[in-house]
Image 1 (cartoon, rainbow, N blue to C red):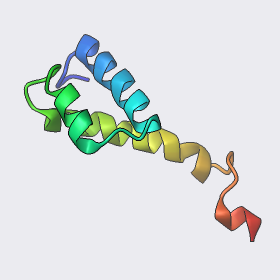
Image 2 (image 1 turned 135 degrees about the horizontal axis):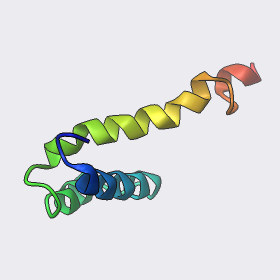
Image 3 (image 1 turned 90 degrees about the vertical axis):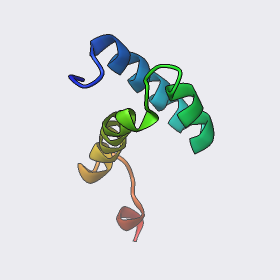
Image 4 (image 1 turned 120 degrees about the horizontal axis):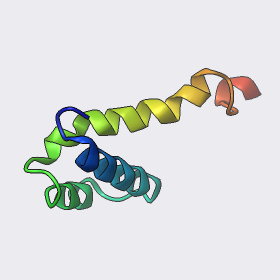
Length: 70
């Protein structure tokens, strides 16, 4: 958030969340991000945050996993 600033962070976070759920291509995501930030790679940490947020319920046992069905 410090790297991007609060407003840009929120815009990038919301965009990436939507794009990942819609299975957007990496090229499409990069192109869109580069309209918001100078380098799309500046958003890597935001993408990581979304990944960890998605994984947390799984590791906490809140979503069924393949292991729970064995």
